[in-house]
View (tube, helix red, strand yellow):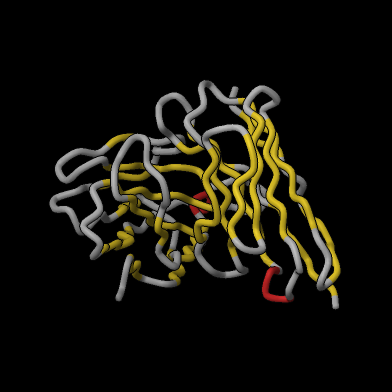
Length: 114
Length: 109
């Protein structure tokens, strides 16, 4: 039982490089989310997708893009990484969009931009 | 603006009871969630409150007062494995989750 799988687990990246964080779920959940978690701050939503083929911007979308070609995959791309994007990134999914209940999180991707 | 407040850190003794408070100011309310997050791991769901009152689930209980914009998570019979961060989150009128910064709970023997 995998749930949500994120890759890579950890990455060090030079500023200006392009990076894609992968997220795959096998629970057939409609809604998927990307959050970043920084020390002293709550989880902040970057982008979300309520269903395959649709995406939306969260609280901190600048510098990030997502796609949702199918139900299972929701990659997050940093087109040109900057040091302020150093963070732990969590992918999550839920069974229904909107008035949902439990979020299921991946194990996180720790990204360091130098 | 929208705001979730919870204490940064708390310390408690193994076997004791601890209450973690959360106050919120959000545009609308569609439920309040508590998640547990061990260091270096992903958050995991603990509880959900949408109506006023107490929800009990084993050693953990969660209380909500919508009129006061207030919730607490009560942990009984504390165990060392309860050492973790506890995240409060509120779903606003747009069904977006607003997260608190989390309360780091330290359990001492």
